[in-house]
Image 1 (cartoon, rainbow, N blue to C red):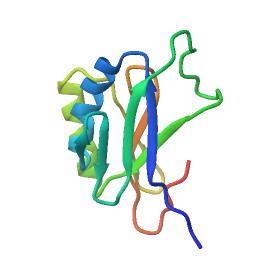
Image 2 (cartoon, one colour):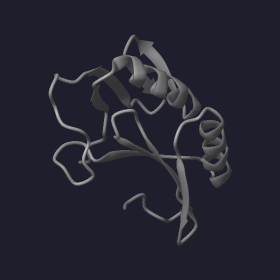
Image 3 (cartoon, rainbow, N blue to C red):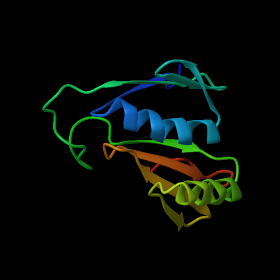
Length: 128
């Protein structure tokens, strides 16, 4: 039996900044807003947002907690097009390519949590 990821909960210091960032990014990668602070895609993955407790530390690449989340893209062109849209909107995004044919986009949210959007050629598993 396999278990599928069904939701992520992301807490931020500034719900307003997170709403602006994710409100721009998520519709471009197939998510729709279901309720205030809740988005979902056609595969049934839900992302809910909330406010972090005051006084909590920053995101750390190797700190406990959610490190990053990755979403697969339908093509390398889709990844490159999203990178261009984000850059045009003034959102930091790092586009990279890896063997064998992976095109990846790394985007930090306002609190530093990384969102990864990648194209993986057929037969290449989506693992770091």
